[in-house]
Length: 330
Image 1 (cartoon, one colour):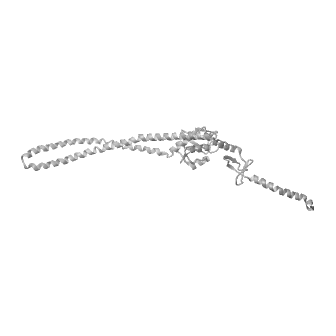
Image 2: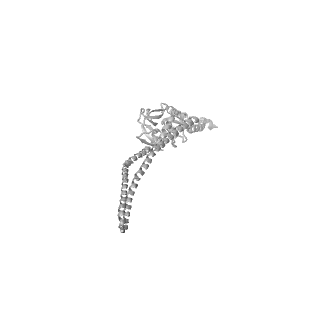
Image 3: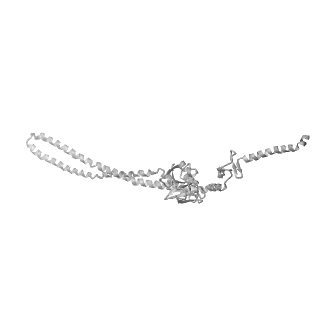
């Protein structure tokens, strides 16, 4: 007791410090526990989240310096994620409308191809009917040569000249063979010279048909352009990358993902100098100092997502970087 009395302050200090350890340990465990801690977020590995992070299906942007959330940048991501969570009924209607538009466009193109094939095939039939005309005149020339071959057989009759009286009559009969001169008329087949028509081999110009496969992705391009136009006014508030991702998915691209604008060329296709409706358009500066991606629909127009907060059809040429066209390959 004397020791406690003499060192009471020290004992009290030791006991106070010892009692603080559980509190400090608890506070430290709480601070390192995964989850939100004020304006910061602790990840599963006990590190502070920095940069872009997706948490519970939403995107947040944290400062690279102290890890606090940047509300202005994050708000844009929240608006985009909220708008992407459209009700199931609205999404179904959009998908159905888009699919119907794509199906109609594809059917229209198939009908045009079928009509082109029907119009072009008769050209082949005319060539076939003309070729036998050339072969027929060749046959009448052969009988002309065979007739004179029979004439020399008649002179075999001179065996009868053993009777002097009959030979007088026979010379009159050989005059009849003069009739074979009439076969000279078959010379009329000279008319087959008219088959100068063989000039028709110029018909092979029809191989212009191979021009149709100039772009093996024509059908895919048509589906992408049609799907993009169905999203106009429906996806207002979404990012440009979300609009492009939905257009690709509706066009049948099974691996359509939301990427950064400059990643689409490497992931889905290649840059081209021959723009076609349905190509993607990349801008290294979309007018606000950031990248931008859109869908070209022809006639110098494109579907732009998040264009002043809306999905609209505007000119390909917008303030900022020059358009770079991307051909999607699938």
